[in-house]
Amino acid sequence: MTIQYTLELVGTFFFAISGALAMQDKEQDWFGAGFTGFVTAIGGGTIRDIMLGSYPLVWIGDINFLYAVLIGVVAAIVFFRVFIRLRRTFLFFDTIGISFFTILGAEKAIGLGVRPEIAAIMGMFTAVMGGVIRDTLTNEIPVIFRKEIYATACLAGAIVYLVLDLNTPLERNYNLMIAISFIIIIRLLAVKFKLSLPGFRGAKRTP
Image 1 (cartoon, rainbow, N blue to C red):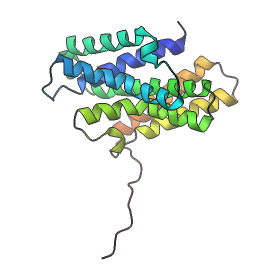
Image 2 (image 1 turned 30 degrees about the vertical axis):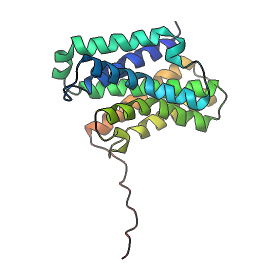
Image 3 (image 1 turned 180 degrees about the vertical axis):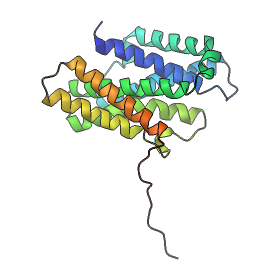
Image 4 (image 1 turned 135 degrees about the vertical axis):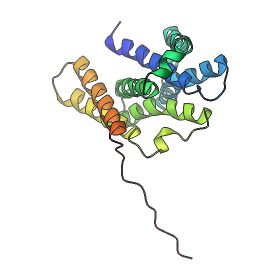
């Protein structure tokens, strides 16, 4: 297996865990947790492929992605007590998931012939839209609408990857790992030090 394919499966696995763990306080059964893990893991990639006209969808064309989701959900259920005892477990799995999916989404978009600017956006969509669906299903404010660095880290990471891939002689696998590490570091530093972008302040209406 190529490193890209392996990372796609690993990212799917981590996102399935994060989706299932998001149901821990929602009084849902195993099916509810499994369904949330499933849509979290495949949601972003599905939206990306539909927008780019890439068929069949990844998880339909390759059964291994469904197996990765299943293993992730089962792991979240079996090791649930272990996971919830670990500090920031949900953050860890979500960060790993978005970092992998961002770069792989951007790379797939480039492979389909779109411009680098569009590829960067597709990478971000791949990473965050599964989480948006997850937060919507769990009745939470989607993380991209909260005042924290999330989608911005994904977009920056996608840009780093594309710049390296298109303008440097580095091997592709090195580019992948550098960009993935960049997203992970930015995201974890943002959470640790509570970094955020400046708030948006619209003009006040006059009576």
